Length: 206
Image: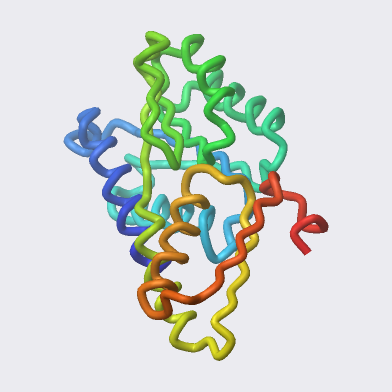
């Protein structure tokens, strides 16, 4: 399912880059990428990282460059990184997490020549008069559904447990899809879902 997510992200970013006219000339397009986990997490952050690498390979480093800050669990630290990158004149700043939205509404109006994108959400804050924030929303429920079907077929007990971070965005949709996939195979299955309220508290999750 990671491959599917990479394809979705590639499509979103490529459309965004082309909409700005990049690729028709040798003008350098610079991207800064802020993520809550590491580039080798086998999931959320790694998918975006590999998508950016693929775009760079296709366009060439002369036309597309990116930098990143990983393990930005603390929102305040991520906000500082976002502001720093915008101050350095990056064309696009990717805030890869639904926890970063409030920070973007504070920062984006100060850097109108920089575009900001965040996910997973559809909210671009037009109600606040902001015009340089964009959004992407992977269909996580589809991957969750497939995994739910597989889990249900492998299970002997019909009892399942899910530990999620915060009940919002990509995580919420994935979990909903997972439960639907299970119930499509075993309508009587029991799915226990626990939200720990954090993206980084490993001790609490355990």
